[in-house]
Length: 162
Image (cartoon, rainbow, N blue to C red):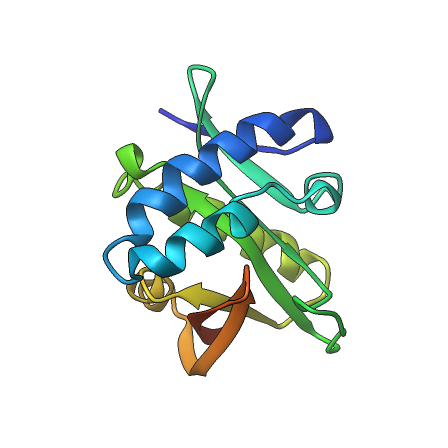
């Protein structure tokens, strides 16, 4: 059985390793190798400010990090919308998918964001994760394109009410 706890800056190395175990294997089904070879080194890095925010959570089982994710009030790229929170850097170890880890983390994110007075959550979902977010009540807003390593990276903006 896994547990959920708040991340700290001391977790940065473990989160980096988790992101590598997650994003590389799981994104291969929706993105070409030429995109991933440039995008992964930039996107699969723990964000120190997010880990130190008190709004980033880790799922662990017997000392092994299985998942992570959090939220912020500022949108990726900047800007704050009153009442809106933004899901950030969610990942599950590819060897541990379909165990409820991502759902448990997002439940904690939603509870925390609701307690902070927010009424909506948004996310920029990879193409791979769209069904996961949809199963949690997120609805598609529309396609977006990010830039990682100079390469366009397709994502889907999604939102849900809290």
